[in-house]
Figure (tube, one colour):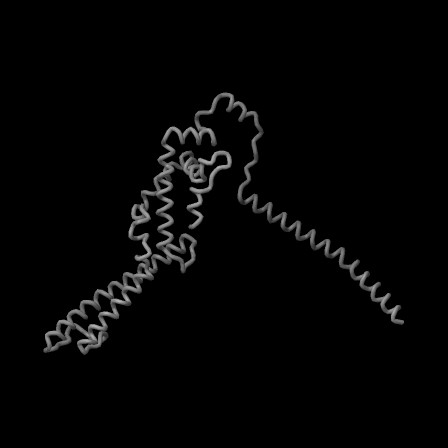
Length: 245
Protein backbone atom coordinates (compact mmCIF):
# COMPACT_ATOMS: atom_id res chain seq x y z
CA UNK A 1 0.00 0.00 0.00
CA UNK A 2 2.96 2.33 0.51
CA UNK A 3 3.53 2.38 -3.25
CA UNK A 4 0.01 3.75 -3.79
CA UNK A 5 1.09 7.26 -2.82
CA UNK A 6 3.97 7.13 -5.31
CA UNK A 7 1.43 7.40 -8.14
CA UNK A 8 1.12 11.09 -7.28
CA UNK A 9 4.90 11.52 -6.93
CA UNK A 10 6.29 9.85 -10.06
CA UNK A 11 6.48 12.47 -12.81
CA UNK A 12 6.88 12.28 -16.56
CA UNK A 13 10.35 12.84 -18.03
CA UNK A 14 8.78 14.93 -20.78
CA UNK A 15 6.76 17.17 -18.46
CA UNK A 16 7.40 17.28 -14.72
CA UNK A 17 3.93 18.65 -14.06
CA UNK A 18 2.36 15.37 -15.17
CA UNK A 19 2.33 12.50 -12.71
CA UNK A 20 1.54 8.83 -13.07
CA UNK A 21 -1.73 9.56 -11.28
CA UNK A 22 -2.65 12.03 -14.04
CA UNK A 23 -2.14 9.31 -16.63
CA UNK A 24 -4.24 6.89 -14.57
CA UNK A 25 -7.11 9.38 -14.37
CA UNK A 26 -6.83 10.11 -18.09
CA UNK A 27 -6.91 6.39 -18.86
CA UNK A 28 -10.03 5.96 -16.72
CA UNK A 29 -11.70 8.90 -18.47
CA UNK A 30 -11.12 7.24 -21.81
CA UNK A 31 -11.80 3.59 -21.00
CA UNK A 32 -13.83 3.29 -17.77
CA UNK A 33 -15.38 6.63 -16.77
CA UNK A 34 -17.74 4.84 -14.37
CA UNK A 35 -14.76 4.10 -12.11
CA UNK A 36 -13.84 7.75 -11.66
CA UNK A 37 -16.26 8.09 -8.75
CA UNK A 38 -14.70 5.35 -6.61
CA UNK A 39 -14.12 7.75 -3.65
CA UNK A 40 -17.90 7.85 -3.17
CA UNK A 41 -17.79 4.14 -2.29
CA UNK A 42 -15.64 4.80 0.80
CA UNK A 43 -17.08 7.98 2.35
CA UNK A 44 -15.91 7.02 5.86
CA UNK A 45 -12.24 7.51 4.97
CA UNK A 46 -12.37 10.64 2.87
CA UNK A 47 -10.21 12.42 5.41
CA UNK A 48 -7.04 11.03 6.97
CA UNK A 49 -8.03 12.87 10.18
CA UNK A 50 -11.11 10.71 10.50
CA UNK A 51 -11.27 8.66 13.69
CA UNK A 52 -10.95 5.36 11.79
CA UNK A 53 -7.55 6.52 10.51
CA UNK A 54 -6.17 7.34 13.96
CA UNK A 55 -3.82 4.93 15.69
CA UNK A 56 -5.70 5.48 18.96
CA UNK A 57 -8.61 3.54 17.45
CA UNK A 58 -6.60 0.49 16.41
CA UNK A 59 -7.69 -2.89 17.77
CA UNK A 60 -4.42 -3.22 19.70
CA UNK A 61 -4.94 0.06 21.54
CA UNK A 62 -8.61 -0.71 22.25
CA UNK A 63 -7.65 -4.12 23.62
CA UNK A 64 -5.18 -2.47 26.00
CA UNK A 65 -7.83 0.03 27.12
CA UNK A 66 -10.32 -2.76 27.84
CA UNK A 67 -7.67 -4.60 29.84
CA UNK A 68 -7.05 -1.50 31.97
CA UNK A 69 -10.77 -0.97 32.55
CA UNK A 70 -11.21 -4.61 33.57
CA UNK A 71 -8.37 -4.19 36.04
CA UNK A 72 -10.02 -1.11 37.53
CA UNK A 73 -13.37 -2.92 37.92
CA UNK A 74 -11.63 -5.89 39.56
CA UNK A 75 -9.88 -3.51 41.95
CA UNK A 76 -13.22 -1.92 42.93
CA UNK A 77 -14.69 -5.34 43.61
CA UNK A 78 -11.68 -6.32 45.72
CA UNK A 79 -11.99 -3.18 47.85
CA UNK A 80 -15.55 -4.23 48.67
CA UNK A 81 -14.41 -7.74 49.60
CA UNK A 82 -15.75 -9.32 46.40
CA UNK A 83 -14.32 -11.39 43.57
CA UNK A 84 -15.22 -9.98 40.18
CA UNK A 85 -15.65 -13.42 38.58
CA UNK A 86 -18.14 -14.46 41.30
CA UNK A 87 -20.23 -11.26 41.33
CA UNK A 88 -23.77 -11.82 40.03
CA UNK A 89 -27.00 -9.85 39.92
CA UNK A 90 -28.48 -11.95 42.73
CA UNK A 91 -25.52 -11.29 45.05
CA UNK A 92 -27.13 -9.76 48.13
CA UNK A 93 -25.54 -7.64 50.84
CA UNK A 94 -26.80 -5.65 53.81
CA UNK A 95 -23.97 -3.16 53.39
CA UNK A 96 -25.15 -0.30 51.13
CA UNK A 97 -21.59 0.24 49.78
CA UNK A 98 -21.21 -3.44 48.97
CA UNK A 99 -24.64 -3.52 47.30
CA UNK A 100 -23.73 -0.50 45.14
CA UNK A 101 -20.41 -2.13 44.24
CA UNK A 102 -22.19 -5.32 43.21
CA UNK A 103 -24.55 -3.39 40.95
CA UNK A 104 -21.60 -1.51 39.43
CA UNK A 105 -19.59 -4.68 38.84
CA UNK A 106 -22.53 -6.51 37.25
CA UNK A 107 -23.14 -3.59 34.87
CA UNK A 108 -19.42 -3.26 34.07
CA UNK A 109 -19.03 -6.99 33.37
CA UNK A 110 -21.94 -6.91 30.92
CA UNK A 111 -20.56 -3.90 29.04
CA UNK A 112 -17.03 -5.29 29.00
CA UNK A 113 -18.31 -8.58 27.63
CA UNK A 114 -20.10 -6.84 24.77
CA UNK A 115 -17.05 -4.71 24.06
CA UNK A 116 -14.83 -7.80 23.96
CA UNK A 117 -17.17 -9.47 21.46
CA UNK A 118 -17.21 -6.34 19.29
CA UNK A 119 -13.42 -6.16 19.45
CA UNK A 120 -13.15 -9.79 18.38
CA UNK A 121 -15.36 -9.08 15.36
CA UNK A 122 -13.30 -5.99 14.54
CA UNK A 123 -10.08 -8.00 14.67
CA UNK A 124 -11.56 -10.57 12.28
CA UNK A 125 -12.66 -7.85 9.87
CA UNK A 126 -9.24 -6.20 10.17
CA UNK A 127 -7.44 -9.44 9.31
CA UNK A 128 -9.78 -9.98 6.37
CA UNK A 129 -9.08 -6.49 5.03
CA UNK A 130 -5.32 -6.95 5.29
CA UNK A 131 -5.55 -10.32 3.55
CA UNK A 132 -7.74 -8.86 0.78
CA UNK A 133 -5.20 -6.08 0.17
CA UNK A 134 -2.30 -8.58 0.23
CA UNK A 135 -0.82 -6.88 3.27
CA UNK A 136 0.96 -8.69 6.14
CA UNK A 137 -1.56 -10.10 8.61
CA UNK A 138 0.35 -8.49 11.48
CA UNK A 139 0.19 -5.08 9.80
CA UNK A 140 -1.73 -2.03 10.92
CA UNK A 141 -5.22 -1.58 9.50
CA UNK A 142 -5.21 2.03 10.67
CA UNK A 143 -2.08 2.69 8.59
CA UNK A 144 -3.67 1.11 5.52
CA UNK A 145 -6.83 3.20 5.91
CA UNK A 146 -4.75 6.33 6.41
CA UNK A 147 -2.85 5.64 3.17
CA UNK A 148 -6.11 5.12 1.29
CA UNK A 149 -7.54 8.35 2.73
CA UNK A 150 -4.42 10.31 1.73
CA UNK A 151 -4.45 8.82 -1.76
CA UNK A 152 -8.15 9.58 -2.09
CA UNK A 153 -7.48 13.24 -1.26
CA UNK A 154 -4.69 13.49 -3.84
CA UNK A 155 -6.80 11.69 -6.42
CA UNK A 156 -9.69 14.11 -5.91
CA UNK A 157 -7.36 17.10 -6.20
CA UNK A 158 -5.83 15.82 -9.42
CA UNK A 159 -9.24 14.98 -10.86
CA UNK A 160 -10.38 18.53 -10.23
CA UNK A 161 -7.30 19.81 -12.07
CA UNK A 162 -8.24 17.68 -15.06
CA UNK A 163 -11.43 19.68 -15.44
CA UNK A 164 -9.48 22.94 -15.68
CA UNK A 165 -8.55 24.18 -19.14
CA UNK A 166 -4.82 24.52 -18.51
CA UNK A 167 -4.23 21.00 -17.20
CA UNK A 168 -6.45 19.56 -19.90
CA UNK A 169 -4.34 21.20 -22.62
CA UNK A 170 -1.13 19.94 -21.00
CA UNK A 171 -2.44 16.37 -20.96
CA UNK A 172 -3.72 16.58 -24.53
CA UNK A 173 -0.32 17.78 -25.74
CA UNK A 174 1.43 15.01 -23.82
CA UNK A 175 -0.86 12.07 -24.60
CA UNK A 176 -2.97 13.33 -27.47
CA UNK A 177 -6.65 14.23 -27.52
CA UNK A 178 -8.83 11.19 -28.19
CA UNK A 179 -11.34 12.94 -30.47
CA UNK A 180 -9.53 16.04 -31.73
CA UNK A 181 -6.91 14.55 -34.06
CA UNK A 182 -6.32 16.46 -37.27
CA UNK A 183 -6.69 14.89 -40.69
CA UNK A 184 -2.91 14.94 -41.13
CA UNK A 185 -2.40 13.13 -37.83
CA UNK A 186 -4.96 10.49 -38.75
CA UNK A 187 -3.31 10.04 -42.15
CA UNK A 188 0.14 9.62 -40.59
CA UNK A 189 -1.24 7.15 -38.08
CA UNK A 190 -2.87 5.14 -40.87
CA UNK A 191 0.36 5.02 -42.92
CA UNK A 192 2.54 3.92 -40.01
CA UNK A 193 2.99 0.18 -39.51
CA UNK A 194 0.98 -1.31 -36.67
CA UNK A 195 3.18 -2.03 -33.70
CA UNK A 196 2.62 -5.45 -32.16
CA UNK A 197 1.07 -5.41 -28.71
CA UNK A 198 3.07 -7.29 -26.12
CA UNK A 199 0.82 -8.90 -23.54
CA UNK A 200 2.07 -9.84 -20.06
CA UNK A 201 1.53 -13.51 -20.92
CA UNK A 202 3.63 -13.27 -24.08
CA UNK A 203 6.36 -11.38 -22.27
CA UNK A 204 6.44 -13.98 -19.50
CA UNK A 205 6.68 -16.80 -22.01
CA UNK A 206 9.49 -15.03 -23.83
CA UNK A 207 11.44 -14.52 -20.60
CA UNK A 208 10.91 -18.15 -19.59
CA UNK A 209 12.15 -19.37 -22.97
CA UNK A 210 15.20 -17.11 -22.75
CA UNK A 211 15.96 -18.42 -19.26
CA UNK A 212 15.71 -22.06 -20.40
CA UNK A 213 17.95 -21.34 -23.39
CA UNK A 214 20.61 -19.75 -21.20
CA UNK A 215 20.42 -22.63 -18.73
CA UNK A 216 20.83 -25.22 -21.49
CA UNK A 217 23.74 -23.27 -23.00
CA UNK A 218 25.45 -23.16 -19.63
CA UNK A 219 24.97 -26.91 -19.18
CA UNK A 220 26.43 -27.60 -22.65
CA UNK A 221 29.49 -25.48 -21.89
CA UNK A 222 30.05 -27.27 -18.61
CA UNK A 223 29.63 -30.67 -20.27
CA UNK A 224 32.11 -29.79 -23.03
CA UNK A 225 34.73 -28.36 -20.68
CA UNK A 226 34.57 -31.10 -18.08
CA UNK A 227 36.34 -33.85 -20.14
CA UNK A 228 39.11 -31.42 -21.10
CA UNK A 229 39.56 -30.48 -17.49
CA UNK A 230 39.81 -34.15 -16.51
CA UNK A 231 42.46 -34.80 -19.21
CA UNK A 232 44.53 -31.86 -17.97
CA UNK A 233 44.33 -33.14 -14.40
CA UNK A 234 45.38 -36.61 -15.57
CA UNK A 235 48.39 -35.24 -17.44
CA UNK A 236 49.47 -33.21 -14.42
CA UNK A 237 49.24 -36.27 -12.17
CA UNK A 238 51.31 -38.32 -14.66
CA UNK A 239 54.02 -35.65 -14.79
CA UNK A 240 54.09 -35.50 -10.97
CA UNK A 241 54.52 -39.29 -10.81
CA UNK A 242 57.39 -39.24 -13.30
CA UNK A 243 59.14 -36.43 -11.40
CA UNK A 244 58.82 -38.32 -8.14
CA UNK A 245 60.25 -41.44 -9.75
